[in-house]
Image (spheres, rainbow, N blue to C red):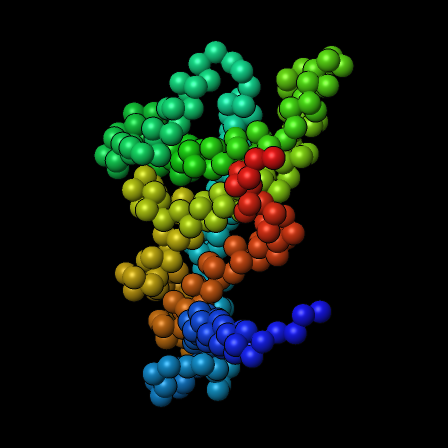
Length: 292
């Protein structure tokens, strides 16, 4: 093994220190949110910045989990995320596969997809389309308009082009249909891509915020991010969670702890998703980069 020079060791040490500092700076906001959410009123009043709660308190979590509107928003967001991810993966995978086949109008369809990346219709035309299709005030308004990402579609197509065409041709010669080839050969070989894009789509659907404000008038259909906006930005914790929830508690928590607890609960599920897709993610992020 070649002995490393002094300059290389110095550079490595500097890189480790810098990356460690960056990691600490990135973790500090999460630690602060966690600590404040579990802090008592006394800690909140005495300390400007809390890195660890001195007196542990759970009233903020009792308040948000006792709120029917908050729990309902979690179920709504979960439903939108699962359904939207499945719909997006189906549409993206099938269209990407279709764009790899020699079919009539393939080039024109590909140019149309690229065109949508370069030019966006804007908010008002999309709003009018959603309104005229009759999906206003429906969860489909959060799914259908952005069901397919043009960028993900093109990257997925490049990944499918890297699959040896001989596999598809052999299956077709053996009598398999295009649907059978897609289901039995293409999809199993596309697990890294599917895992990566399912994560990207799931994060996007979980964080649906502006569309919820724009298209949903019924508060019972609000996703968690819209409810989080009411609690954090609008400072309407009592009205959003319900006045009865606060009245039934002997020591209602301060608004700041409720806000931090709501942020943590809204962020945690999507963070938990990462470890389950980690083994595919490292390989999946390289899809489409090299065609071999």
